[in-house]
Length: 153
Image (cartoon, rainbow, N blue to C red):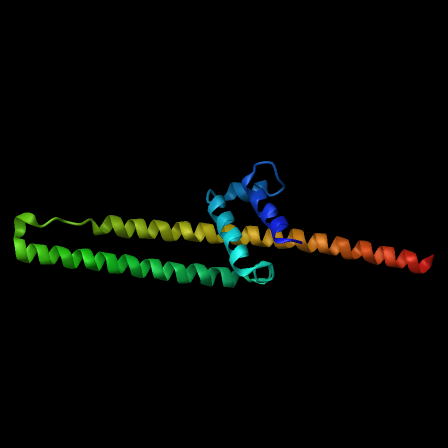
């Protein structure tokens, strides 16, 4: 099966008229997961993408999450340092407060979103693999049947 055919199968999750419809209704982040599947397929190739394990996907998401968390921490520390510098150099009246709690809530919300996307990605990946395996099995069965018929005739 070609990469274009696999991408077409993956994109079928975006429509409401396909056999995967029950899967797509579970998660509102289907389009994000589809885009990530297609990106990974293009980046890593068919063989890697089809043979990857759910753990591989989770590890990639984990690495991204760690990077994002570290960036958030660095940003918050930078803002905090800047605020302290302004406070000590210009005085209390210029000091502007920063809503750290909102930033932390945002980060936690995004991490929960990432878990939903991981689940959807793995669901799509598993469904596509099943379709490909079934098609391959049918093709092999058909070839075996033809070979058996040719031997018997």
